[in-house]
Image (cartoon, rainbow, N blue to C red; front, side, top):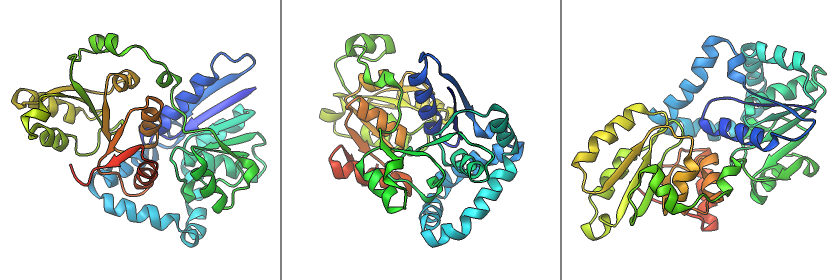
Length: 331
C-alpha cells in the first residue's frame, strides 16, 4: 500500500501532525509512505505569501483574523466563497495535482485543509480514485475542513464528532482518534536525568513557556510579569522559554537574563519538546492543536494566555470546560 501524507506549512502544528503519522506508520511491512508539503508544489509567490499573510494577521491584526475566521465559517458565506477558494488552490498548486496523479497513491492522509480540499476535488472529477483521510488538527473543525469527498474524517474528541455531524458529515466517515502527536510524548525518559542533560537547575518549580513553532505571543511580557512577583513565590520558580523559529525573541530573552531576578533558560527551535515538557511542572502557552495534544500526552497542566481569535479560542473553551487548563485574563 502506498500512502501519501501531505500538509501545508502554515503553522508548525500541521507539519508535526504529518510527521507523527509518518513515524507511526514506519516499519509496517507492505507500506510505502511519502510525506510532502503541498506548498513545495505551489508557485513561488503562493508558497511565500500563504504562511506570510497568516503570520502577519495573527501577529499584527488578530482581531481581523478572528473576524475572517468566524465570517468564513458561516454556512451562507462559505457557500459562495468555497468555489473561489477551490479555484485559487487548484490554480496555484498545479504541480501538486500533477504529482498526485503521477504517484497515484492508494491513500492520501492530509493534516491541513488545503490539500484535503484539492484531493477531494480530484475525487469528484474522477482524476483520483484512492482514499482520502482528512485529519482535523483542532478540537472544532472549520468550514475549510469540509472536503466532502473525504473517505474519513479523523477527529480529536466526541465534541469534534458532534461538530462534524452538525456540519453534515456522515457518522460512518468519522473516527475519533485524537490529534496526532509524536509517540515519543507517551514515553517517560526520567525527569532527573533529563534535567541534567538539558542544563536545567534542579530543585525548582519549572514553568515552561511556549508559543508555537513561530514564537508568537507575549513571551517577554510573561517573563517580566513573573519576574515582578513577590520573592517568596518568584524564587521557587525557574522559567524555561522555547522561542521556536523567532530568533529575535530568543536573542532578546538571552539579553534579559542578566537583569532578571527570576531564573530563566531560553531556547530556540527544539526538536525535543517532549523532554522539556517532562521536566516541567506547568506550561504557559497558546492553545494550538499540536501543543495541546502534546501537553495532554505528558499530563502537563496548562495556563492559556492570549489565544488567537478563532481556532485557538475554540480550543481554549473546550480545555477550560473540561478543567484541563485555566485561561489567564492577561499576562
